[in-house]
Length: 231
Image 1: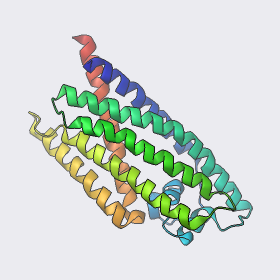
Image 2 (image 1 turned 180 degrees about the vertical axis):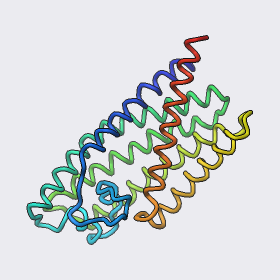
Image 3 (image 1 turned 90 degrees about the vertical axis):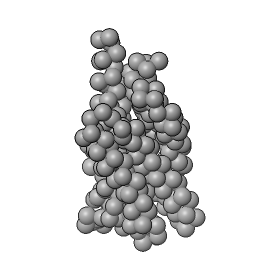
């Protein structure tokens, strides 16, 4: 069971990395310059828009001009790809956390294995709101209210699953691993809280922390798969 979980985690994790690379190649833009806010990531700024002014900064006002239409079409394209990403990272988190739970005898990590797919469900709901907001006849205020709940539901659950995975290594025989695991887990929790307080400033820290943990999960799954085959 452990070997199969590590292989499934590795396969889905590599899929996550491939789609992440695709996102990086899209070179999305906002109507107005973000000037460092939201990590200069238009999609993240779009997700975390809290007011019509925040939204207009990313996708422009209605009715949209030619530049705003181009921006919206690019964001829509990315959001359709994102549905594939959600399926991959939901499975990846579930498999990798279940594998670590079994390998290190951390039954509480099964909670994280469940929370990953729940985060993806929030992400699906978020994407539906984003795709509605790019329409020129969008009813902006209620959509933004729904977007707020769905987006923070996703990010906070991803922060929690990342913190839990890292915490699974606390108590390792090598003290340095315990220290690193504790610091990464603490950073994931803290950045999740700080992002809710000031998303424009701290979302980059949160997304980078999640990215580091996901790479950790891929590497751990790969090493475990190789070791299980050798034995």
